[in-house]
Length: 198
Ligand SMILES: O=c1nc[nH]c2c1ncn2[C@H]1C[C@H](O)[C@@H](COP(=O)(O)OP(=O)(O)OP(=O)(O)O)O1
Ligand SMILES: [Mg+2]
Image (cartoon, rainbow, N blue to C red; front, side, top):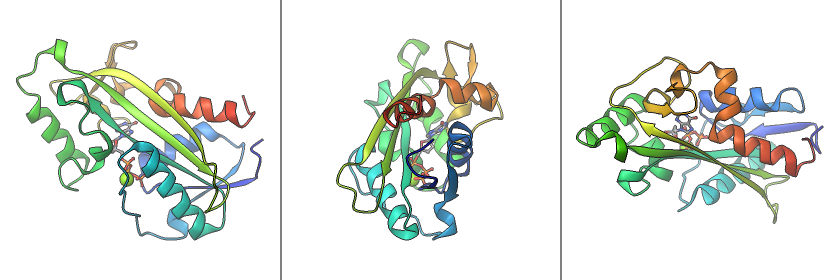
């Protein structure tokens, strides 16, 4: 059991919410921050950690509940780690399809050997809005950027992310498998350990 029985997930991303909910199972009653406000906080941090904390505090303040936030993104080696914390805003807020198209275009002449990338996930849990000691857990998932989209599952950059340990794109993995391998799964496993749940 979680050290509390209700938790607000501080995300407005449907894909993430689904994955986080599946990973939490019924260990805790999960609410979504959208129940309290549809306004997304500005992600002004310079790190995944700062942005995750900022989103968690915002959701906790709105709901009066403990809050779990996820700040994540794709770090491409050839681009020196970009788009990184700016992954959601890579194509100036035009959405996943535009982000993916931009990434394919920027990498169009880059050979396979230089297309390494990592998905990064930072989870931040605050027990209340002003919690002075948020719990932070990180997870990485190593792969490579494909030359064209592949697969229909998942969200975001999944169709472009080749998963070497499964020989397919992350969008070709069923949710149950992605949720055991991904950056988010790794961060969640650490969080459960920290909370004494695993
Ligand atoms: O498993 C993933 N599979 C594919 N793409 C992913 C994944 N995990 C993060 N991503 C991408 C989506 C978005 O371009 C960015 C996250 O941005 P990020 O600000 O953390 O999330 P968001 O704005 O979509 O929702 P919110 O901030 O409300 O949680 O990285
Ligand atoms: Mg965001």
